[in-house]
Image (tube, rainbow, N blue to C red; front, side, top):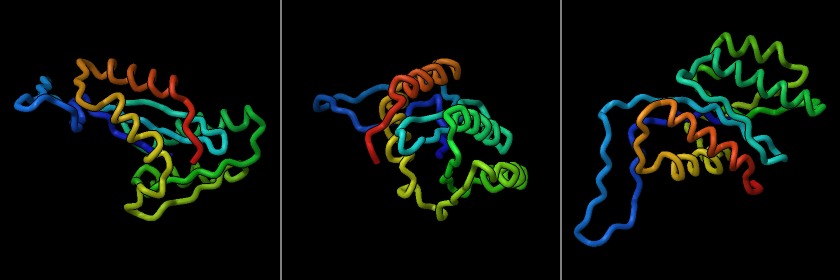
Length: 161
């Protein structure tokens, strides 16, 4: 599971330009952001995601409820969720919810500062930022949300880990 802030200001990456030229990216100067909770479903190699403007325990619990519906609808018996130690992952509210879900959910916490251990970071988030956010300015938050949703739905499946 991974959560990612996506900003309306461009994520600047290297691009090819002729000698002496420089790419110009015009933006409004505001840097509103949207959040994406993204979960890689292994071994299916599919993703579930929730988008929003905030990132807190309530939003994370809603994402877990969506995962629960998905798992139980497909007659899954157990779901192992690997997450980092973000404040909303370890909050009292989240821990209480996770404890009540013990019949279907097991949570494994990654060590702090170890994004390289999280396949969602390497398989999904980097590609999302490179393909959707790099060197592009979105006029509105809704345009950014729409582009990210479209990208995640169209891709939907990732190479084997």
